[in-house]
Image 1 (tube, helix red, strand yellow):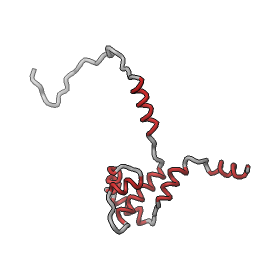
Image 2 (image 1 turned 135 degrees about the horizontal axis):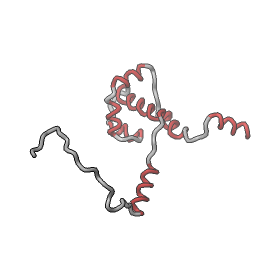
Image 3 (image 1 turned 180 degrees about the horizontal axis):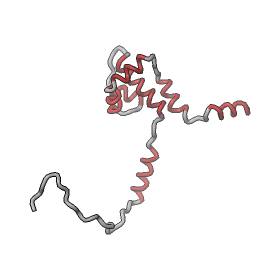
Image 4 (image 1 turned 120 degrees about the vertical axis):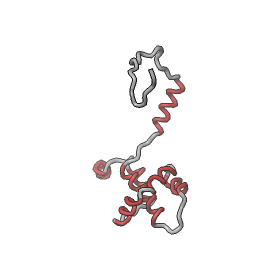
Length: 127
């Protein structure tokens, strides 16, 4: 029988594996370590990073390299490139008068690890 493009041939279903998939103890430890290092950004932190990238791209005088911006903000250069390509959204956000500073970014990163506002008030009142 000749091969015909676009026609799917029925294949028998795959059965159970001969041997179970086993990971060494070192591989399991490495996997757990890598998973513990991953950290998801909050929406507020991502928004401030985007604003800072757009500000550096559109507003400041001398153009900074994507590498410098990425190093300052603690993100990858490819992420900076991706955000800079979203010109319309950046101009719209900057046109509304929104600005951010590195202090805002630091507060967004560290401030969320503290107690919520109502619990902070209770702690202050208890003193």
